[in-house]
Length: 423
Ligand SMILES: C[S@@+](CC[C@H](N)C(=O)[O-])C[C@H]1O[C@@H](n2cnc3c(N)ncnc32)[C@H](O)[C@@H]1O
Ligand code: SF4
Image (cartoon, rainbow, N blue to C red; front, top):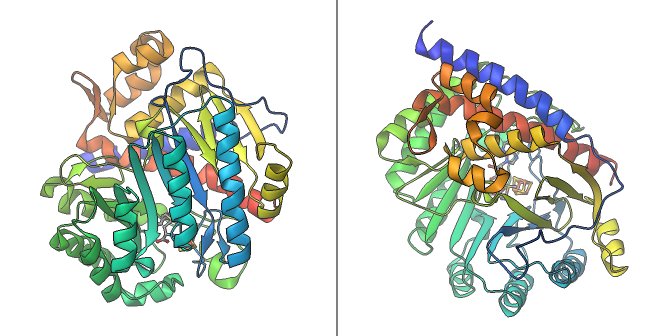
């Protein structure tokens, strides 16, 4: 078999296993324990990160699989009040954080509330890093100054594509490709890391359109780009949305090869299988940087020492639970040891390397004993190689891309059900 065939076949198999594992992972219970700080971690702020979900946008993109609502200012202001209370509930339970990741939605839609929230974090925690998502439409010189002053280190700007025909076909009303380029230029150099998000494998997207996007990104000399493979939104209802219920994966590898050719072999380093950076940069994958993370906000998830927690997706329930002094968790699962090991392996390999020493520190065992069959498969197919760490090879990159996509796709199925049923 040619290298390309091996790469596609192993990616399909690894993806299939991940999909099955992902479905099991998400068999949740609504009878959950209170999240607690593990023994030996009390008073420390370096073992778990905090993900903060701001679920409001000025317009809604039909392909989007995250928990997001059309901005209603009154509702959003109330939400920020609840969000602070939720963080306080964690602080009362002894949680301390230093790294913060804001995702959405569009966290910058109400700048005064966001800046107030950042102040609140600084008063309560020793803030080290802040990563913030936004769209290019939100970026102005004033917003840049305010975010910098508030200590934002990494700004991630959703672009999706620079091609106006494709943006129209996507139903993305955020602004034109030309505006996106102008805003990216405005932000570049203003933060430790500026990232641009793109999506590939849209139904009508041509390889040539995508190549042009990647080349333009390179010419802009931006710090970083994240390329998301389009993930299905299985429950979506409107005519435009229904186009994203299923995704044709037959062309996905061809798109991915464009990224590898233009960036990976063109001087950019793979921070993850989706994220390519110039030099060492902050990434927004809190699931890679940290083994444990707490999620706050409606529609966020958290992972603490083998326990997976899901917050309510409903804005109304979110406010009600918090006003009653309760954490807004609605679902939970304790992972089995094997699931925990595999989840750990998946997230670290997505981040390009598994460190046997860190594995031993977390699980108290040798990685080759605990993950013998999984690693044997990866090694046999040439997807990883052994150096000081177990590193993903260029041939293994597509498999890691597919595995992560399958895991997120399983999570999206959950997201969409929770949105639809307002759980
Ligand atoms: C939650 S959004 C927040 C960014 C910002 N609101 C924006 O749209 O520019 C983060 C990223 O997720 C990606 N994304 C959203 N829906 C997706 C889907 N169905 N498949 C793949 N990626 C998706 C997009 O690249 C987007 O920039
Ligand atoms: S892609 Fe971004 S702007 Fe569009 S709906 Fe999703 S979160 Fe909102």
